[in-house]
Amino acid sequence: MTMAHHTDVIIIGAGPVGLFAVFELGLLDMKAHLVDILDRPGGQCAELYPEKPIYDIPALPVVSGHELTEKLMEQIKPFKPVFHFSQMAETVEKTATGWRVTTDAGTVLEAKAIVIAAGGGSFTPKKPPIKGIETYEGKSVFYAVRKRDQFKGSNLVIAGGGDSALDWTLNLQPLANSVTLIHRRDDFRAAPHSVQQMRELVGAGKMKLVISNLTGVTGNDNGQISAVTVSNPDKTTNDIPCDALLAFYGLTMKLGPVGTICEKLGVEMKDGLIPVDTEKFETGVQGIFAIGDINWYPGKLKLILSGFHEAALMAQRAFRYVYPERKWRFEYTTSSSNLQEKLGVK
Image (cartoon, rainbow, N blue to C red; front, side, top):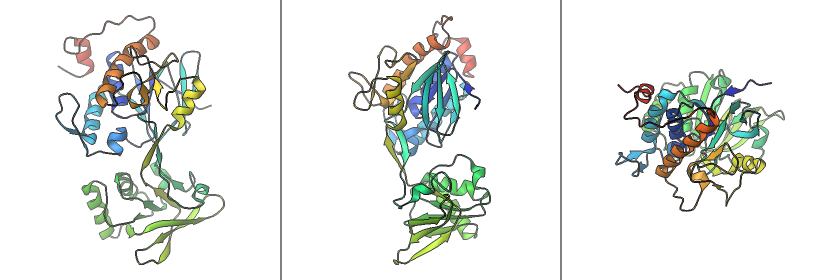
């Protein structure tokens, strides 16, 4: 049996609200593990609009999604959160002492409380419109990187033109035997510095860049690909030999496993959202909370600002599950030497 990770609170979702929940829990001496399907923190902010300006974060007249994520990560660093990226919470079970969450990667987490901070739901990868690609998924075709060493010595094709495609091109190029990046046009949505690094590798003959559309895959019945087919601007097609394909075509939002989990646990849903008690942002099931865009209550505003408020009240209630015998008198961080020491403030 897989050994479980034990913590105080499991947070499903590592967007801004999930990250701030780590801070509020940490102030009350609670530790957290976070599960997110993305390969980095930040949720929608980091993945969908990293450079888009946000204007309603207190004390920050304007901040990008990327910058906000970095600041939140810095803020929660003293509380040492543990992240489980590129994973989805697949099952949730009640235990004698709390809750057990198992991810689609087989990671097992146990805690006294669960916080669903999944935004509008789970991100799911957009798949290339290629007939029969399902045969190879999870064996030689992937939409996320879970173990870098899996691609060591491989002949790798990466498809896409955004940050994920460029980041993994740069990170896996030193490990792979060969890397070919495929994109439909010679214009990329990734950070300019990453694009420049990629072009330098191409210029040095250390990888290939192919401006074409990915249109097919070839392989055996056991799910191992041997080549990808591309359609070129001049209407010709050709095959590129490979033994692994990473496709980064973006993400779509779906309620996904969160909805299934809620249904199995008897958590009430309202039009795809989770109703909560606004005194503590707890669902109808004790010990399970919902904060951020995933929840619903009268007057709900889908703002990051609102999610921060919800995280603070959630933490007060979660404390009672984690430390049922302890009494806690919340102290302002400006006046508590104990809290200042935790935060590294002198």
